[in-house]
Image (cartoon, rainbow, N blue to C red; front, top):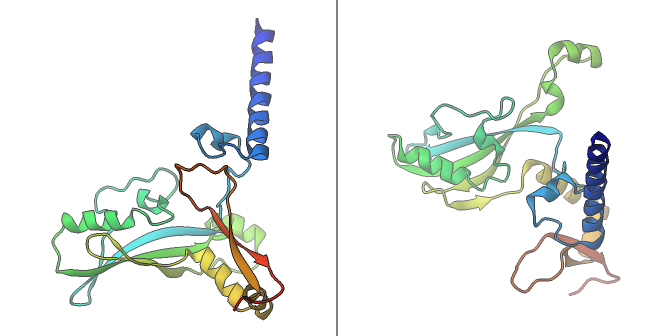
Length: 215
């Protein structure tokens, strides 16, 4: 009986891996089910080298600034990051700030800023480990970046790239060769899922090299 159980687990494990391989090879239903997260190849995509925290700052008519992150007891699911820090795209930060404003007394608010606070993750290691690995003193350099601007009701007024995408863009525009390549390129859209008339989505934008610039 134990042997049958062992064989069943092995077959189930290998079958799951074969399923994930088939899904990626055939590009069928790659993201349609939550269980696919455990067998797709990019399950750890998006892990960056920067640690990020979210600052929600409201600006009043007098010019004073207010912290409008949730004032109630913070929830920290993992590590030191609070729950609103996990909204990496800032989709719900405007609603969080508007909810805080509805339940607090304050002067009239003109706008709300979503500010990203970032530093290199290597500074998260303990001081004793830092001393063994690095010769320089541990002096974290923190960056502050305005990601999104909201109105007092939480609606988006202006949105920018995230910090890493902004760095990639700056490295692009500072390179004359890459600028020339882009000027001689034609944009096109790549989608890795079969066409379904009932679904409307755009996944990625890339560039195709052309011999001349379309005027």
